[in-house]
Length: 272
Ligand SMILES: [Fe+2]
Image (cartoon, rainbow, N blue to C red):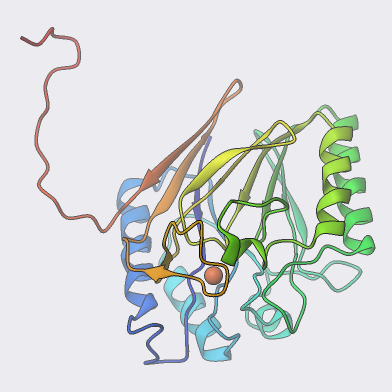
């Protein structure tokens, strides 16, 4: 089963440039690329910061651009988003019984759980008791049914080694509770997240994770500066994820890269 992971579209109001760039152009090209190359994917999931400042026009642009997709899509909320505006413009961005943008998607390969780590007034993430209880219940149900779980969220519950971003990761108390949940259940297969605007992969509590670049501005690999997030304009990318019975494979696709394509050689013939 193939899915597409894309993140941090950071759309503004119509005509607005974000750090001197127009993020909608990168998103339009991503949609074009996905339609051309990966129309066999089951779905696209965007892990937050859909808008740069929660502007209604940004979500309208997102809705219009994503309407060109030939595959279904699902949205996760990020710290730059506005929950109320988002749910108003996207009927599929449903709020749970506690008013959070969380949902469960049943798929042929397992249960996808989309989390809401947003709180107004800070770029850091939270995951309160209500949300933790909801998540624990959903994972528990999947575990009882012998179903693997794939989690999608905006903030990561661990430090990445980039101090200017780690101060706006998921707050420590929630991370500790999430750690307990990860330790308790053996059915969590992968954690996909956004927020960091960099390709990063590894594992946490024995569970694999991956994140990737945004559609607009990226974060430089600076492991020293604590007082300022360091930006750059590396190319946008999306991930092509293959969920297999015994492996999860994550391909990073710099879909706007334009260097020459050429034949390297027949893979079944020995090269001199
Ligand atoms: Fe972002």
